[in-house]
Length: 422
Image (cartoon, rainbow, N blue to C red; front, side):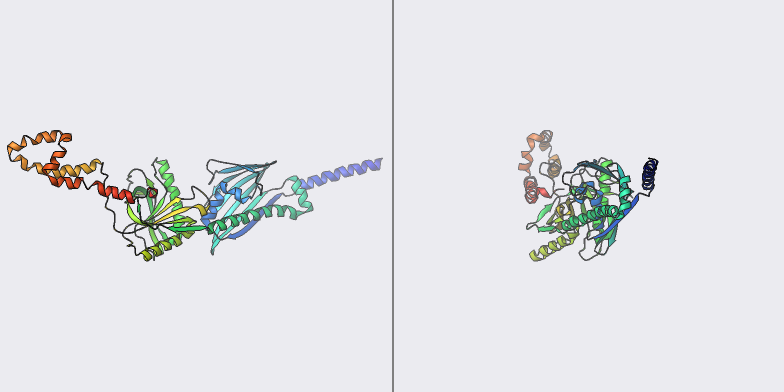
């Protein structure tokens, strides 16, 4: 019996020793995986930074379509978070920091925390994406690691690799989809007041700069309660098809005219209406050069008089604010054609009536010399409503400006496409 007691005690001590040994093992793990993806760095960064896209990644949730997701009001940037529930598994992930080339996140799956770090680096023709997952193993995972250390590494490694592969498959295939349509008839690009920022960059850096300042302009307008009237656009006042360096203004359309102080980061102005050839790109901005080429080809084939003295406009009608899928972005390129449009006031505007009165008023001067004629004229000036026909009969010169004035306005409205407004 004593031997059995000793054996039993020895087993207990051995089990206790094993438990202590496992518990005292360093359970920290670090898994890093890298992949070169042939997509712009800003596109990849924006995609990972927005949790609404993580349903396509399946990095932490696996390929289970039954998982349910919940998001913070702001799904991108520092402080954004996402939670999910999948059977007995639940988890959350929150963005701790987000720069232009890196993202730090804190994930918690079934109560266990892990750190995720993303790094984006430009490479020839693409972007090298690195993801590192760091965390602590549970007691059961430590015990499993003693028996098969590769099993644990394989699980997390496969998870990271699968996420990168999904990112590559989804984005690269999505980026390749695009469509370009050139309008067969000229359109009238409507004018607008705008708030903008002027920059000079290489042609290849325009997309990056515009996206950066679109956010700044939208934040500035929201902070100062400036009413915007449409989607952002880029204004080229001196566009050149040959130069690699271009100066342009990143703009958002605003309702009312605004005056900014000298030296301000932002400027205000007004885009006047002009006739243009409209080319629409549906797809990623990397295909914009093809849209420009299609427009130039159409102009050459139709012998259209391109007016380089007028502004060129690129309107981001459907952008990353509406969807993270580049294949669904809609961008309109307006190339000015023909002479500038002379601004005309609406026929019912009070500003139109003023020139008519100025034409009539000089005609009353000769009437001041014969005293007899002046006694009847004041009656016409004191009752404008009743005397409107009289100046037209006494001075036929006043009728031509009044009658043709509405005609240009109606003709302009006929050519104006309501969909062209911001």
